[in-house]
Image (cartoon, rainbow, N blue to C red; front, side, top):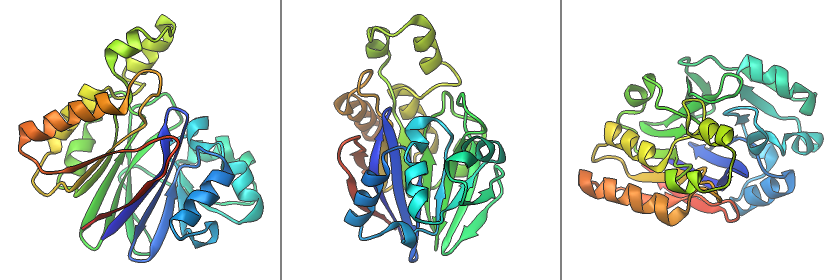
Length: 257
C-alpha cells in the first residue's frame, strides 16, 4: 500500500507526503517550513521521520521552505545534479543524492523512478513511486506529455496529475502575451484537457485514485478541472475516485492498494 497526503498544491506552493511500508518521503518544499511541519504533524509525522525529500525542480513554489526547514534538521535531499547546484546554498548542511531519469533507486520500502518532464527549469522531474506492487505516478509542471510517461505510468493504481489552467480563463487573465505563451507552451503547464488526454492514454480499470494538482487560482478552478476530468473518467467507464488538491487545506491521507 502507498499513502499520499498533499500538504499544498497550486501555482503558489507545493508539498506532498508519500508513505509506503513505513517509509515516508516529502516531494517538494514549496510552502513555509512552519506549514510543512504543521502538515507533517497532521499526518502523524515529523521532519526527522522523513527518509528523504524529493524535488521536481527549483522554482520557488516548489523549494521556498527548504532554507528554514534545513536549519533545525539534517535533510536527505534527492534531485538532479544541476538543481542541486542551484539550491545547495539554501541547505548547506544537507546530504544530496543526484538522480538520473530512468534509474530506479530504493529508499527504505519505496522504489522511486524519476523521469523527465518538459518545463522551463533545471532538469525537472516527475516520479514513479512503488511499494509491494502498488504504483503511484507523480506528474506536475510539464507543458507536454513527454514520450516515456505513458509507458512508464501504464498500470498505476494512483496518479497525482497537474491540471493547471483553463485556456479561456488563461486568455482572459490579464497576463502578458509572453506569459500566456509560456504557461501554455511546451515548457509550461498542462491544461485541463491535456490532463484528460493523458488519462485517456493510461486509463485502466485498476486506476483507483486520481489527484488533480497545481491548479492555478487565477486561470482555473477546482470545479472546472474536476468537471473536465470526471467527464473523461465517465467516458472511459472508470470508477476512479477523483480528488482536488488545494493550496490552503491539506488533502488527508489517501490509501492506494
